[in-house]
Amino acid sequence: MNRNLARMPRFILLALGVSLAITAIAAAGTAGTQALRGTIQADGSSTVGPYVQAAAQGFEKKNKSVRIVVGISGTGGGFERFCRGETDLSNASRPIKQTESTKCRDKDVRYVAFHVANDGLSVVVNKSNTWASCLTTEELKSIWDTGSKVDNWNDVRSGFPNVPLRLFGPGTDSGTFDFFTEKINGKSRRSRSDYQATENDNVIVRGVSGERGGMGYFGLSYYVENKNRLKVVGVNNGSGCVKPSIQTVQNGKYKPLGRPLFVYAKRDSFRRAEVRGFVGYMLNNQKSIATKSDFVPLTKKQVARAKEFYKNALKG
Image (cartoon, rainbow, N blue to C red):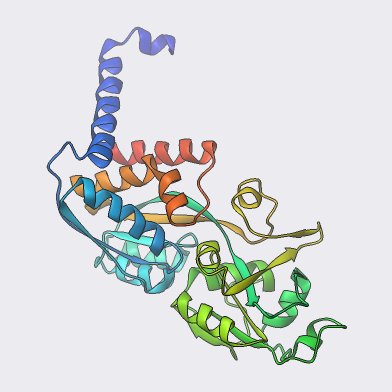
């Protein structure tokens, strides 16, 4: 213990009080020992949505008087509602942008961000696609970049068959769209527009699985849920071909498409016991929630950092 603190019992008692408060909140989230009640409104990323829904199911079982409503309007759409003060939590597959943060500040909406899981953005093709097992980041850019005229698989690489390329992907309100375009095309939102865009990842699944020359991209969980209908493509950024998995995302080898996932909590909402309890439940049970909903759990270092953010948020 720090020597200065050792000479100051009042500070020790204060630290002990904070520690006990954190323990009490964690207990409320995991064991339902407090009579929590109320409705929590969450919205945002279609990628993070299933994670929060899985967490909500577990939390509601332990806290029968709490109802958690999870909407899916895309990361951008979720932040719009969040900054208007309409939701308690905003699920995001990317960090909040400066323009969005400014809107929140203008509406006096203060927030704290929690890193809740990891993801490996997955490039998928039709099951009957036997020719594309790995694509380079340069090839992906040639397909998805602004003004791209690539509309056949034989335009992607010499030796690929003469099969029309049909593209499906997230809409412009999606954090997945922002992340993919930044990492592959070099700038966020820099993308060709002549593809079927949607905020519903299940539409992408149906589109790619229904077209022999189909291609799309979304979070790893949607591929895992639909791997009997889709084929995942490895990505080569110059260091060899790597496919997304829990191991390759956690060890950083799935570059450049590994990413963190977030839940933003409005500070006014976080003061409510049921919201504090739910966020605490997500962090205390992140591994089982991630496993249940096909996400990549946090590393030990990431868990420690997320819990430190939680403790700081409790202090106000």
